[in-house]
Length: 434
Image 1: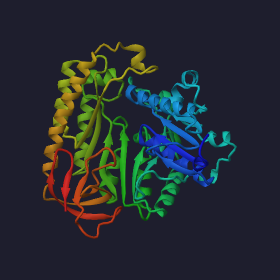
Image 2: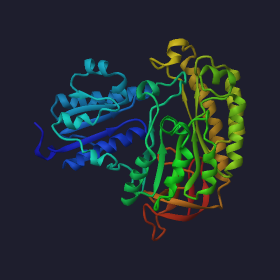
Image 3: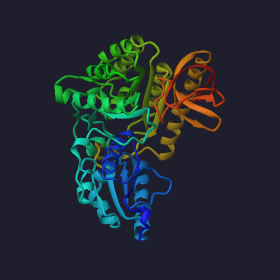
Image 4: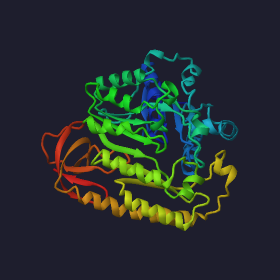
């Protein structure tokens, strides 16, 4: 039996990306309004209700999600928690398999019907709260999801299988959500989607990302807007003008490129060429001086040769990305690659290629950091950790990018505020300021 102090307590555990986090926050707001005590990623989740929001993107993420479900299924058997619900991408993708294999879960929900948890508990979904969220981030920044789904057909990617076609939210809806969040103290917004580049094409029949960002930048109280997950093909070039003209639009762009050789771009169905990609990078750098580019590379895809890897390394040296992540190919059921290619590159070769890319990028990132010593930069303070305040510049997105460390002895510093900071030293990843 559950102890009385666990009654009307909901524990939400979020795995995967920031888009999942937004879904969790929206659901948490509904439970808040019903009078539940809601906790997110608690150290020891043991509530009357436990909800696991899963990721189903690649092998490692799926394994983590399954292990988390099994962990709570065992607690459910031992009656240490009450009801156990599972939602998100993994259960959207593998609903029947999960229902058969983990019967201890009270009910599985997909990526888009998770509000049915409320009605299944005999509660009413509050449509008047649909734009409200219980933030799990520090109160000064939030993620802002502007669309769902993806219309691309990249060979390796399971996201369209999970999320379906691209669906843009209305600009009015997004503006209203931002106004609500600003009224609660949010100053910084990370715009997120599976594909920012496509925003508006389905709803307005034209690319609308530049107009949306301008409208959000005009909202009083919005101090920073940062863009994540743009696609290189059909790139909305007018967004570069917006970055130049608007001080509160960060000179930062997360542009998922994945590879560079024409051989791999064709095999991966990226709908862009090597020459077009080089020209895109050149134009972005020319039109927005000082911009910081984040990208992701995929190595070990079927058909990749050593020549392709050498081309990729040459491209990384040319582009000098300020931020770069990489991952090894994962053969995902239902994808074009799964159906049409043989996953014939050994795992140790994939890892070797991954290491080559990341070692090269580590050197570049370190060199770029050294150039910042002596600069004065606007820094947002996120938290205190040990002997330092931890902050970020406009070039640093939460969770994924380097940070700025400032000695805690500095007087008058408040979390959530901006400060002009002199960069006095730099490591491979982080900066040190005063």
